[in-house]
Length: 534
Image 1: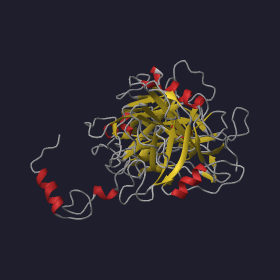
Image 2 (image 1 turned 30 degrees about the vertical axis):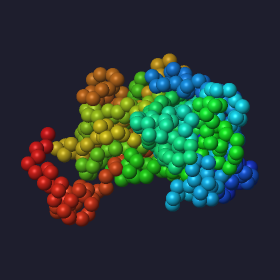
Image 3 (image 1 turned 30 degrees about the horizontal axis):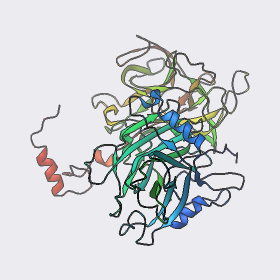
Image 4 (image 1 turned 180 degrees about the vertical axis):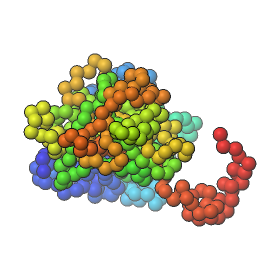
């Protein structure tokens, strides 16, 4: 197995995880993990060789992180992180033993093991002081459809907590919350602190990593910063830092397990988990035409360039057999001449997806008709899928063994596509890469072909009645994908939904589609009595 670059993931949290055994020459951790027990924490701080681990963040890392966070271009109008002085942290695992933690003891029925980060000393002058620590992930995971969760008990005196992701290129995506005194009226972006001598206030923070913005976090974050070049599919670290307002005349209680007061924070139950079927990923297939593997990791086909600024663009027909909405679209492609498992430096800023009506074959070949739905996808995610086995290889213009990637776009509900019940069930999907106008494209993107599967050949749209196509545009000219001449090829893609087939044909009276006819269905019926559809 090829060893990938050692890559790092920041976390400013209580981290301990269930590690996986890996080859001795690779530093890597599992993409998904849960950190709960004292033993888990200890394994993070004192790992076995070949495992991910937790360490202190240093000043240079902090400076890079904060410089990016406060870049106005990355903030996009959000609040910058307040000025603060960074101090090197002390990390340790503390077991409150059911009663004595510095934050007031364990909560009944909850794990009592957590990570403490403390920094500074009682003799510091008044001011804002921050610190942070790093969870080194090892081999970079794709967190594009994951959720990060953590519990925190910040003592009063804490003013900000931030969580950030850092990718292989060092670009960040980050959130921060303000911390308020207990009893202060709550508001978005504010966490409640644990008062000295009082019961601890524990907050669970979750971040849906498939989303961006302050709303990706629960509770809603106060601020959000995102480097436009950040890649969620190449996360090296997740960063958490803490900022404390130090008042020497009114110091907080000492950190758990210590006697000298200093800034500190206490973290529990860290987890990174894949998003389930309710997050927003459709798992029910409406149409599936995936790549054809000759053997695991070796894909039969080649990439056909499809770039929105130019022509032609690719399209292929698919069958819609029910009225469940299209909520997710997945397609495969490569970058001409690119053979690495990571994306090239210049990638599409977006993909333009379109759904067209069908014009059946009439002595020639079938092709798209009118563009009836379009979506500008700038939140696409990707993962490495394998290498091409180009059947045309042998001609000098064709590159062997290009890297193939799967691309995914999860649509918000207002973007879903619904089949028109009054039309035929065959549609066409078009996919085209959108690049920045000034971009130098050394490795242009192309849609992956596959041996023919459904209806007619895939096509390349050469012209429409207006270029570039918009909803309402009509196909004017194109050509089918064939190799050799007369042998049909299709494009590789899947169209999915988040609704099972059962909901389209439920039991009589099962209005809420839960496979039971009961009083809830009567309530649904009564609520809709005499309602008129638009």
